[in-house]
Each structure stands twice: as structure tokens, then as C-alpha cells.
Length: 289
Image (cartoon, rainbow, N blue to C red; front, side):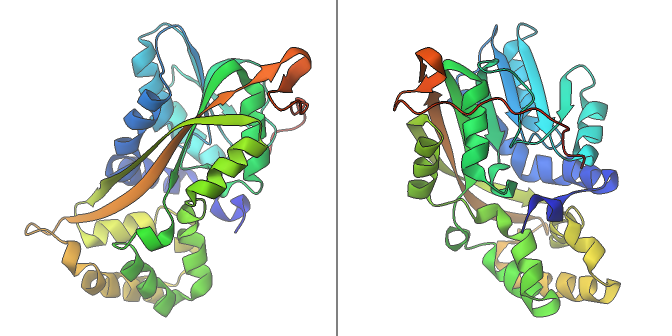
């Protein structure tokens, strides 16, 4: 699955902001920003910002002193980000070709976006390039699918009614969950991992129906399903996710993830600590979502 498969319309991005953000991403944003040590006076870049929950959290900590830029390749996501926070900077561009000079930001953040980039190491190298020498790069990824025991029954339902390709599309969140491999990717990008936080939080939804509307309706999968297939998935999910329903019908799915903080180390001549030339700035037309 490539990033082109996960482009969202403005309507789908609104679903993402209204449901996914409070259910899950908004719960992780403060932990990512705090792990990165964001403080007033800094310049902060949020890569693959989506509708901007991390950028908004960083702006809150900056208290009006500093700069926050949110960057995403998806025009629909950015349209919602601009609506929610018109006072922040929003840039439509590719994580593989960040349109900023070397050393532009004190902190570079990426929450739950690296798994949608075709070449994660190259994206990390770009994050290292635009980070100031000894600046911070902090990324959040979800643990591997095998660790997401509450989600697996739902994917079984999706596969039964929509096929394995549908599961590949909506379960791509978990593909970078191997911490050893992630640390190797950071090192290959010229970054020195300095801290790791692994935690489990709850993805909370008002009901199973709302979860399916978010997980399917807030992704490109919905446009690929017939109404009949969607109904079958909905009915199957009500049974499969029953153990995670509270007495009031709300749904709580334990979700495990990692936050890794790293340092961008470059010496004279733009070289990293291992003597490898830092990635040159890439310019060109940003990919349109």
C-alpha cells in the first residue's frame, strides 16, 4: 500500500478530525510533544500532520512564542487543518522532499504518519536535514499488529466481507511497530535515538457503529465498498467487538504504540556523526494530494 492509496477527501478528513482525533490521536499528541521537549521560543515542524492535532498541541506549549509549521501531502487533511487553526502555518508538500533549508527547526515531529511514506528512511533523513544541529526528531508509531489484540477481531470481519486487500489498506498503521527495525532506520538516517516510550492507551468510541464509521468511513476503504459489504462489516463488528463494549454501549480498544526521540547530529560541512554527508535539500513541485 502506498500513500496514494490513503488520500482522503475533505469530507473524509472531517470525519477523521471529528472522530479519529478525539478517539485516539488527540490522546497521544501531548505525550509526543512532551517527549520532544517542546518549549516556548522554538521552531517546530509537524510532518504528516493530518488535520493538525500535534501542531496544535505544540502551539499550545509555545504560548505564542515560536513557530509551528504543519506539513502534509494530503490537500483534504490540510483544508480541515486550516479551518480548525487558521493562525498556524500549513504547507502541502511531500515528506520525502521537505521544502525547507537545512537546520530550519529546533524540533521535528511525526505522529502516526511515517508508515504511510514509501521510503521511511529517506523521510527520516529529510527530518534530520531540516532539524538544527543537535535538534530533536521525535516520531510516534503504533506497535505491531500482533500486539493490538483488541483490533484483530475487527480485521477478521473486514477480511471475511471485503477481502485481504481491504485489511492491508486499513491495517497499515501497524507496519512500523518493530522497535529494533525503527531504531535501525533512525540510525541509517543519521539520527541518534536517545529515548523510547512505549505505552498503551484506549481508542474510545461512542459505539461499535461509530467505530466502523470512523475506521471505514474515515479511510479510502469506504469508497471501495458496496453498501451491502459495509452493512455486513458493521453487523460482524458488533459481534466481534462485543468483549470491548461497556455497559452504555461505548467501545474501548486498548492500543499500544511507541514514541522514539532522537538527536540530529551534524558536524562541519553538513556531515552527521558517522561522517556520512547529510541529505541535500530537495526542491521541486510538492505532490498534490
